[in-house]
Structure formats: structure tokens, C-alpha cells
Length: 337
Image 1 (cartoon, rainbow, N blue to C red):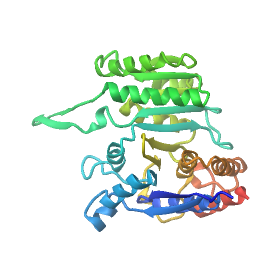
Image 2: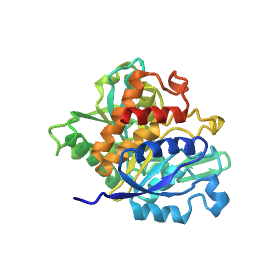
Image 3: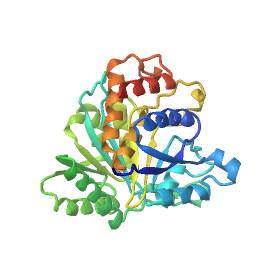
């Protein structure tokens, strides 16, 4: 009889509601029977108080060693303070693909039922390279970086995913009518990659028109391929179509490492009250299980989650229920049998 694998996972519970939703998700993951060994670390302001670093060296070493991390929300200061922990980790480990599936949960009424979208966002370039400087007082310049390597790499990821999972159509989203060189390069790379995938229909839409189309007829899209900033905006817009950031998963994928995370905020105003919804982190953990080739466990958790939503008896307040974080996790565990 084959020995059961133990997956060593770097765990970043985050701050605010992070520790609560993380604990709920860990209870569910442990109940799958999959063996985990968790290496737990702080990041952000809490880590700075303990280690004098916003991302401790030990955390970097753990991700480098384990190759997989599960991350709760970490507060990012606005307009000052430390750099985004998310952006820093993505750059450090070349997590070039931000992957976010957008799908309705049963039992939740929306204006756009039956959505099944895949958002593929380039994760390391564009405006998020952080190259900003003050030219003269009152004038700040920010540099957008688009490379052939980065654009080709993310396009290949999108097309290979589409072919493997039977997705039929990819749209590249751009503003090449204005940013002719940078977005033009992104499109040229996508077109070249598309030539090798004749089984996938390829199209292009301008970013502002795409946002309008998404709130009028999102069903026309299948997979969206976007640069970093556009992808950041559109992925949140699409999350809103199915109920918000508290419901959708997020994965940051590279050639060697992967970080699975809740994409919502840390919500410090409700921290410690046992009312936060752990669905987003749980959905991200399901993606992690698939990444670890634990498909049966992933299916089991996802089916239980859908059962709880379909029954609508034990939902959290943000989706019209009265249950708390712990009660919701208990309901998922019960549905797993």
C-alpha cells in the first residue's frame, strides 16, 4: 500500500479577519484526510513588530523550500507605509500568472446567473513594477514596463490552460489604440502565441469597452487575458458579478512556486467577531488541492461548499445569512460527511 504523502505548506494567516478565516479553512482541509504540515508565518505590520521586517527572511525561505503557500488577507497601507506584501511576493518568486475563476455559487441570486469566466492576469510587469519618481515638485512620473518575455509567457499560460480544460475562446484586453508601443507589444505576443492554438478562438477588446460589455453581457466572454493593472481592475469587477471578493478564489502561479490567497481585504472592523466569511480562502484552498494533485479532496470540499450555499441554512451575514465563521465551517464539515 502506497504511503500517504504529507504536503508541507507555508501558511500566512494575515491580519484582521485573516486568522479567523484561515482557522476555519484549516479545519476543513484537515478533515479531507490529506496530510499537511503547516509552516506558519506573519507578514506585514505584525511581522515588523516581531522580526523588524515586513516579510521575514524565514518566510521567504519557507516558500522557496515548500513551493506552495496559502495566504490570508494582509493589510496594505494606502499612499505610504510598506510595499504591498502581495506584489513583493509575486516579484520575488516570479509568480507571473494571476489566475481567478469566476463562477456563481448555488443559492445566491445575481443579475448574471450561469457565469463561468477565467481571468488570467500578468502578475509581474506593467505599472506594478513600482518605478515612480518625482520629476520636479508637483510632477510625478510612473513607468509602465511591458516585455516580450512577460507577455509571451502569460499568453502561453492562458492558451495552454484553455486547451487543457476545454475553454473555447480567449480575448486579449488592451488599450493599444492609445498605448501603441506597450500594449501593442502585449497584443503582438498574444497573437503569435494564438497561432499555435487554432482550436481556441482568439479575439481582442479595448479595456474600457470590455468593462461596459462585462456589465451588459458577460456571457460573451470565456477567458480574459490581461496586463497587470487591467487584470487587477477587471478581476474585481468580475468578482462583483457573482457576489463579491468574499466568494472568489485567487492563485499566483510561477514555474516553481505557487501562492493561493483570499483576494479580499483584511476587514479590521469585524476582526475577532466570528462573523467573517471564509469562502474566498476556502475556494483558494480548493485550487491549492488541485495544484497538489489532490483532486478527490478538492472535489469533496467544493461539493460540500456548494451544498451549504444551495441549502442557504448556514450562510454568513454578507450573503444574507445569520451564521458566524465557525458555524459556516461546521456546516461545510457536516456536508463533507
